[in-house]
Figure 1 (cartoon, rainbow, N blue to C red):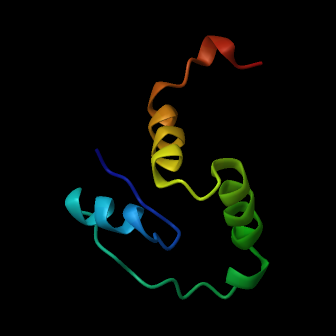
Figure 2 (cartoon, rainbow, N blue to C red):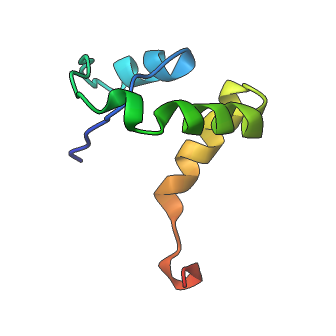
Length: 71
């Protein structure tokens, strides 16, 4: 499976990405401050209370999207 990750991984996510054989690269995008990443990170932290296992459950849930549930 080819996959590109566009954001910095932290904590357990970084270790997991290394275990998966993903390469780490620094973003040089000029739009980083305008991307909304910080807001989404804040929302994810609030949703999961910072619990890495909850974050992993959300990430894994993206593998099983049932398109018949979508509008």
